[in-house]
Image 1 (spheres, one colour):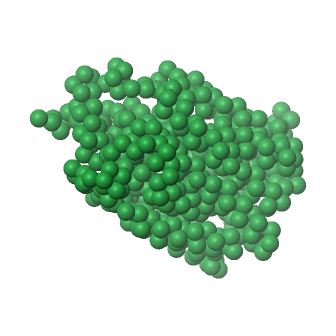
Image 2 (spheres, rainbow, N blue to C red):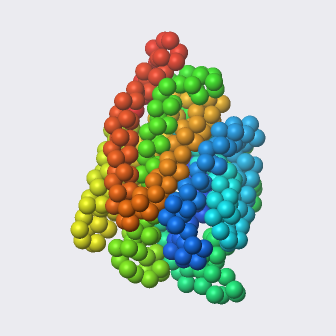
Image 3 (cartoon, rainbow, N blue to C red):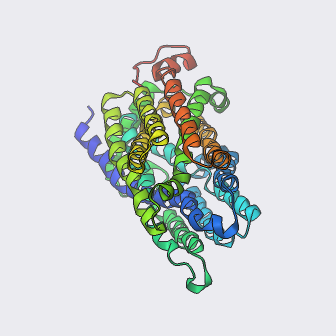
Length: 438
């Protein structure tokens, strides 16, 4: 007989052990990924970058990310999360610090590409790692708590980045160089700590009492037996639903990174404030998104429904982006940006339980990496579109409307994804024991 209370205690203990540390790593990763948006407030003028050059450099991160995402996640599945996540963090930290050496478009674009290649595999690796520690009905909440680190990177990182820009001239470095130096060092330190802190297998988790470990293993095995079938890696990579989910994520990410990489510059244009003040104002959309994200994720876990939560979030993002582009008053445009952030960032937690509902093992590592890699190409397209439209039209409004369009389409596409139990039946040729809402 299953001891539900023991199972809940085990999951709670795992949550307390893993989520804070992994979220801190993601906080630093996300900060190192998007701090270029704040650096641009000084760097673009200092180095003579146009909107197109900046947009290309900001977005090319995701081409490096795309090329190495699947190999990185497959290596993680083979060597274990402890070693591989540690390696990822140390290398991306070193590359991030090297950004202070940028001298022109070529070095800027090259280092941004290398930063994406270095970080490839981190986020999908954590999603895959969660499948070994959290049952399906607790996974969206775990992903939400982990993903809230990206909100914290905006809430805390935005004012921090604004303050670091004020160090212009100290020790002969410009403010944007101090930003890359100070925000890159923590990744190297956390990578070293991860090597000692993370546990690859539940069986080796000495921090988990024996009875709780047994209850957790039973819960995970029970969930796998009820809802999953083995799908070969090749079949997962060729699965139409995997590619459809990749397209959904691509559209969400196009909107999200087009928004986040240009947010400081948009806020600067709306407020005409100092760089430090822009940092504080830019934190507000992320604060709003953080409060909404957890509520959406909890409701999705509670109801077991995923697709409509993703679609509704995407459409809220589209409404906010569209209103921001069309608003005449700066205050209204900024309020609409906060609404857009709520929608964009609330879509992620209920999205990731969709592929993990029908993929496992090597297929899960490869399938999740494929979805994340293709999806994150939107991180190249979104900023590139924004930079191109800014140079073409002289304002951000046209680019923001394009981002709103991609958000609308992502919501329409995700509702066409079939529920997990149909995917399982199609893959196995037989009805499953129990269906899982999606």
